[in-house]
Image (cartoon, rainbow, N blue to C red):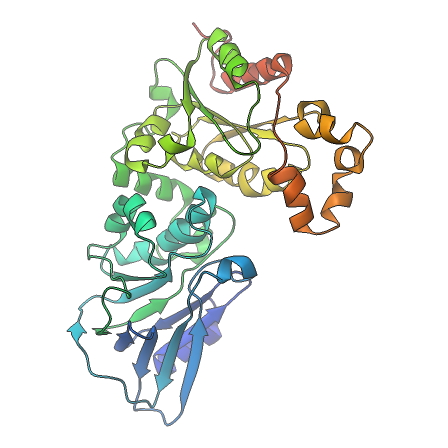
Length: 390
């Protein structure tokens, strides 16, 4: 629990909740019964005469109405109540969270589920059981190695296991700190982002901890197929190869099998991609690697906030290639003097959905190869090497 008040309540009643901007988390440190048919947590306490009800949507993006449409509420009834009889008894506490929200997008999967799950559960040393609401089989399968390293028990799917489960305690909801971030002082056990990366290496059996162990630098190019795609990707690959890199072009279908793709990422010393969810793969790069984010028109703030700032904590070096207006497909579409080109802030002032349609979903990029080459040379120097690579 975050505050002294929360802790006092937990000690006095066995149940307390903490609420902040991003998430609600409730904790019961005494026996509970969870009815997976109704998503209700019963926390009986006959030492007190009162009773209360608390509802949580256990997904770490509560301010986002769109995301929360896909997250079922979990109700907690606590105090002087009569709970239903147990069907199953467990000896480890329960952790209830949702696999709804914006899952299906790599950034949101790590930002709102995987990292918050690590923050909330790692100090239990896998002695707790996950109840995953809004059960998403694809997500559970994709992250099976992470889930099985955080809990030694099989996941409970409420939809498939409609019954009453008894646990010695429970947490409902996941703690969230910031975009792709861990706040060490606010985690039991004081885990850091390097600890999280070490946990990922152990989960996926990745060998390389640091780029210094590599013979020849490998560059991975995140290839987008729908928006913010590189229109001259083949020519970019030519420039990369000419500088002496071995190149891996990662298409979206290749990135979906994490068990295999993490090995590829762990062997790379540079990642290049335009702003988008694929850059979240930086969590699997070895320490000392370089992420080169291509910043599309109008997406400066998002590029810095979601990736530019967080990657430093990952031990990854950061470079930006900020495109010029003429490198955006919007330049020919709107003309050089249009507010879309010269004043993106005026488009954002109309609301995010208007700006998103233009800058996030509506532009592609044709990169200036001379300037791109100069930026790659900076990346090579950050690796402590000289260009071209020999």
